[in-house]
Image (tube, rainbow, N blue to C red; front, side):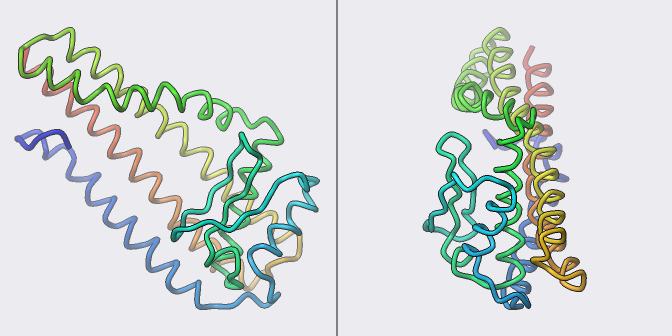
Length: 226
């Protein structure tokens, strides 16, 4: 948060949203990870079936460490599933697997926001590292140009967070379609899966809100200093 001052009030809505999002995803996962899917398939088996039906059998599926660390790597064409998801047979596990398969389909289809985010990763990483020291130096020594460069650098990280939103929502939409059309999940079970996916999506909304309001805070601090 850089430092505490009166402008911290700008971040309060985003902080509250972040706490709420964390609560929702933890409670949703805790609840639906205890409910077994009627199909009895493990996360890996669901991944294999969905990849086969999507003609993406070249993608590797690997168990990885961590909790809710599941992800699709478009560079290595690899699906990393945390062990609870890889071996799990719950509705939560199958929903999360389908979401990551949704990312794989985005990659295969050349989904523009995903390609844009992949290209943004290097500059967003550099920008996020440079933003704080540059802005602080400019703020402490009253150098507006340094503060401006810091703000521009931070804007790249904000752009990354914003671009991530349609990617995640689209992957969740694809996940529901995959599970229903593939006859993996029954109509009676799909609402439970949606609750897990919606809770996870809220964490990305919260992250974007924090980034946007932090950028606004930097702009306010810059105007005050100059």
